[in-house]
Amino acid sequence: MAYLTRRSFFRSSLALAAAGTFARPYIAKAAATTATIWWAQGFVQDEDVALKKVVADYEKASGNKIDLSIIPFAPERQKIISALTSGVVPDLVDSNPGEIIAQYAWKDQWVDVTDVVETQKAEYSQTALLAAQAYNNVTKKRSFYGVPIRSAVVPIHMWRSLVEKAGYQMSDLPKTWDAFFDFFKEVQKKLRAQGLRRVYGLGFQLTANGVDPNSLFYAFLIAYGGQDIITKDGKPHLDDPQVKEAAIKALSYLTTAYKEGYVPPSAVNWNDADDNNAFHAQLMVMDVDGTLSTEVAVKAEHPDWYFHDMATQGFPLSNDGKPVPSQLGIGCALIPKGAQSVAVAKELLQYWIQPEVVGDYVKTGLGRSLPSMPELIKDPFWQDPKDPHLSGYAKQGMVDPTIPFYYVFNPAISEVDAEHVWSVAMFDVMNNGMKPAQAIDKAFKRVEALFAKYQIAQG
Image 1 (cartoon, rainbow, N blue to C red):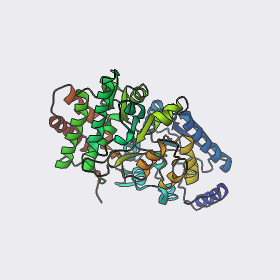
Image 2: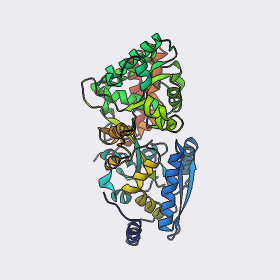
Image 3: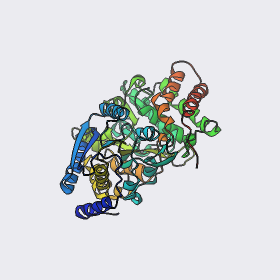
Image 4: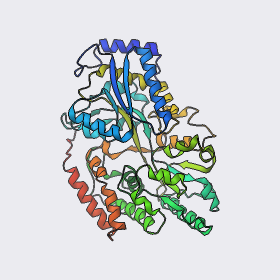
C-alpha cells in the first residue's frame, strides 16, 4: 500500500499543485483555502464522528478550512439536486443517491477526478473503479467522476435465535439459492406450530418505495442467470432468452412467497427503514437488505442480539452451484462543476483515500459500510472472531465476486429504478392477476422505452 506521512503528503501535494496537476478551471480565486462540503448524515452517530475526524485531521495538517454540513439523507439528496439545477454548488458532495454520479455525468456536471483516483488506483477493487466512472454525453466517453470512499453489499440478515427455536441449527442452512430461501418457509411453519402466529419466514421488500425492492429483484435476477440484462457497454439485453427467463423466475419466486403467506402483508408498503424495524421486532426470520445497518443499529443497546441472537451471511450459491455475484454499491465523493475550491477539494480527497485514513474512517463508523480497497479487510477489525457479522460481510464485498449497480453502465437504469418498474411488475402479479411472463413483458417494454433516451457511443 502507498502510505504517506501527513508531512510528506502535503509536501507532494504542493509540488503537484505547482506543476498544475490540480486543474483550476472553476476556481474564482486561485488562492482559495476553504472548501464547502455537504455530506449525508450517518445511519449511526459513529459515522458522523468518523467524517468529522477526517476533516479535522486534514484541516490541522493542511491549514485549509473545510466548511462541513452534515445533512439528513433525504433533505441532502434534494439539496444536491437543487444546487446542480441552479448552478450554485458546494465544492464536494457525496453520491446521494448513488445513481447521481451517472445521471449528472451524462450532463457534464461533474469535475473529472481521474488525477485523484490515480493516486490510489492500485488499491481499489475493480468493481470500485468501474463504479467511480460514468459516461459523459457531451464528451462521448467515460471517465472518473467519483472518488470511491466506502462500499456496501446486500447481505442476508437472520435471527439465529428463531432458527434454533424452530429446531434447526445455522449449519442446516442449504447452500443453493431456492433451497436456502425455501428453508425459511419451513422455519415459519415450525414457529407457527409453537404459537408464534405473527412471525414470517421471509422479509422481502415487495414495495414501490426506496432502493430496497430494486436491490432485491436484481439479486434474484442475477442468481437465476440474468446478470447481463445490462452490460458494461451500457446496452440492455432484453431480447436475450436467458435474461428474460431469469427475470420471470425472479418475479415468480418473490411474488409466490408473498401470495403463499411467507412475507409480511405490510411489506407492500415498506420504506427502506421499515424492513429494519420489522426485523428488529422479529416480525420475520430473515431479511435481504443493504449494509450492516440492521446489526450496528442495535449493537450498543442490545449487545446480546448483536453477538448471539443475530447472524449475517452473503448470498448462497446459484441453483446450479455457482457463486452469485453481489452488487457492490460504492459511496463516492463528487466535485460539481462550478465549485469554487476544486484544488482544495481534490487535495482533501487525495488525503482521505490514503489506505490508512480511509481504513480508519470506515472502522470508526462501526463497519456499517465496507472500504473500497480489498487489502484493508485484512485488518483485525474485520477479522475479529468474536464478531459474528463483520468477516462475512467483508468477504461478500471484497473477496467474493461483485458487480456494480447497473446505473454505472447506463443512467437509464436510474429512471427504471425510480419508476420502480420491477415493483409494478410485482403488483401486477400479486394484485392484478397477471402471469409473471406477462408482467415481465410489460416491464421490459417500459425499460426499452427508457433506454431509448440514453444512447451511448461505442468505442
